[in-house]
Image (tube, rainbow, N blue to C red):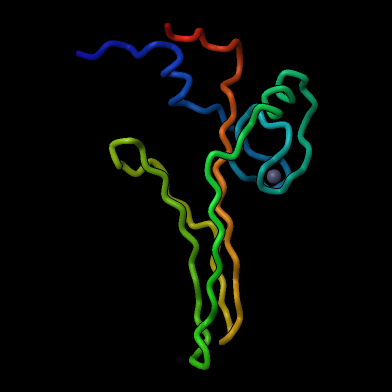
Length: 125
Ligand SMILES: [Zn+2]
């Protein structure tokens, strides 16, 4: 038998989402700006305040170069999200493409952390 976790924990484990009307990406319901296509979606002062408290918790950049002088190659960009037990909770193919010998592609992965909607949770003593 398991007890229900405290509210702050439940909020942290769920995210209310919707589809961006412009690019159809799944985004946070509270987003003012789509992180995918960067279209402005609505103006909500509370959401704007949360947006201003958003911080980038992880950012990784890197680039690869096509084999030279070998054959052209194809690539596939995959992102996997795991919980703190290592279980995969999401896996997405973000993009695919091809490179000619000597060509270069750069990739940036970023994870933005947004405060939860609604009143701020009480601080634990
Ligand atoms: Zn969008």
